[in-house]
Length: 171
Image (cartoon, rainbow, N blue to C red; front, top):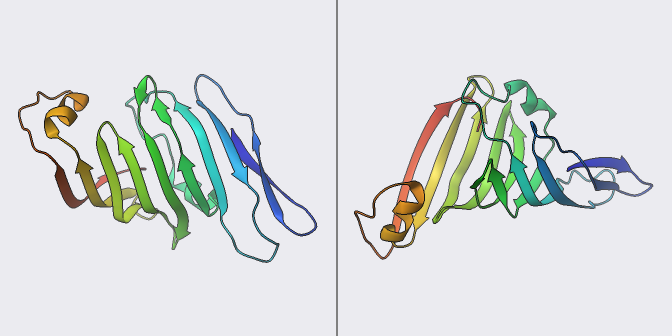
């Protein structure tokens, strides 16, 4: 589902609308009504269950042209699945700034790893690159490594990794 918007006499309201196909995925969502008109407030979007088809591995599925079309949104994804793989729960504030798309206050959980974006994730429109600056937190690595297809060759009560990195294309 995605949220549509309409103007009432005193506020902008967002409502869930259905959208589903084998090629584009599906979602169940709740959209929260926002404040009075004239107030620049982001949309609050809670996605209960988001399913996306697995990628083809060929090319980037998104063009930088979409950056300009994305409104300010506070996003909560309670469960995300890509193909058959569980991609966990996510929360972030999505904002446009100077032709870039920022995912601030990024928090997620994915196969035993908590992802926390210090400076967040940024999709740079001019260069079509994505950067991430943040932290990965894990419980016992002997339990987490097999979730990623690795042998439990290291055991540790907890692990925390900080870093910054990037890649070409969209997030």
